[in-house]
Length: 277
Ligand code: SF4
Image (cartoon, rainbow, N blue to C red; front, side, top):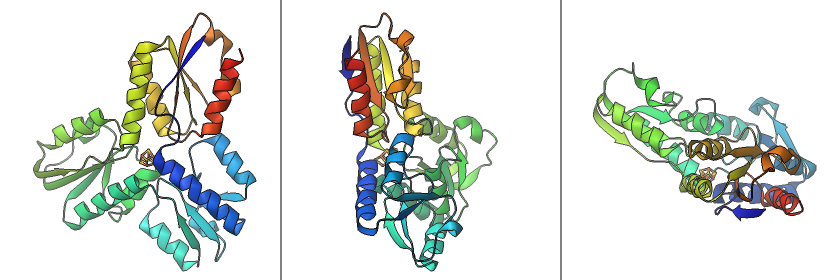
């Protein structure tokens, strides 16, 4: 069996930067709280908990004057303010690309545009972007969602950073007919696009692709979707013991891809496990 390792693979610069900051804070303070899961990878979260990380869901659960980590997806200005009021030390791991989408949404809102965020309304990053418009932005996940959207003078668009470019383009083209003035920012992150391109190449070169990443990772789910759309036989695993023997049967060339939130140590574990078969 030959393995074709996709490149780029695993942690993007935003996740790496955030996890480096979190690890440094754990070393300095011993105990650090995270609002929600710091990364969409269950195995990496377990490792960070073993180093002193504690997860809380709501800002109200943070102890006074504690150290709180803001994940790469960012958070809303309202939550940041509440944490500051509690005297918390804030370790801001918000990815610069997410900050850019937040700033663009804030700017559009301040300039009187009806803001539309193209993304998953439940995703924390989308909620953080929406929060920068004081909650006024509408979130749509496809052009179907704006079929009944009323016409406006000024419409502004930003995107979830992990969105597929085709979805953003189709939303913008429908909105062109609904606004006298349309301003759209392409806030899709190149790291995501590059990983999707890698999967397209692997689909053409291999007999099947193993995608490694958390079940709650949107960008990993997108890689699986892209691979399947390209006609590849895709196996999505979160760790080595999920490699299905029957899936491997009769496959001689296998591609390896991983989401932007999958750590190197986990990718290496999968590669070592496959190499030893
Ligand atoms: S995928 Fe892009 S936007 Fe998201 S954390 Fe990574 S670098 Fe930042």
